[in-house]
Image (cartoon, rainbow, N blue to C red):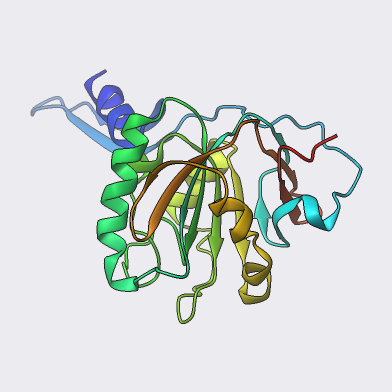
Length: 224
C-alpha cells in the first residue's frame, strides 16, 4: 500500500506494480519490486471527425503522433516561446512548469522545444511525470539544434501511451506552421520571458488518427 501511495505521488496518477516475493525457509523473506507504471486509464474519445479542418482553423498538425481519437476538454495551454527560448534555461523552465501544474486543476496542452521529459537538459525540457500530471496532450517542436528523435521507448513515453494522452512531434517544417500569433493572442494567465500560460474561452479540439499517423489541434472559436 505504501508503494502504491508513493508511486501515485511521484507519477501524479494511479499506478500498478509488478513484484516478486522469495519465501525463505531459513532466512528473512524477500520482496522485490520489478516494475511500477501508470495504470491504464481511458481518456480519448475514439469517435473521430471525418472532415479535415481548414488551414486557418489549425493551430498545428503533425505526421508523427501517438494516441487515437478526439480530445475536446482542454482550455489551458502552456507553451515555450521559440523567439525567446534559451536552451541553457531548460531546468529552470521545468521548475516553472511544475509550479503551474500545481496551480492547475484542469487538463492542459503543453507545447515545447525538443524532447519533453529528456534526461539531457540540452535535448529538451527535463520535466518529470509528476511535474506535468495535468497535461492531456503534448506537442514537441524542432528548434534550431534541438531536434532529437522522439524517444518512443522511454519510460516517459510509456506513460503517455498508458494514459492515452495525445502526443504530437513537429519537424522543422511543421514547427514553422504552428500558429504562434494565435497562441500569443489568447488570454494570458501567467507569463515570463520564455514561458506563457494562456486560457481559451472555449475548449480546443484535438483530432488524432493514430492508425494513419497524423493529427490536428484546432482553434475553438472556429469550430462548427
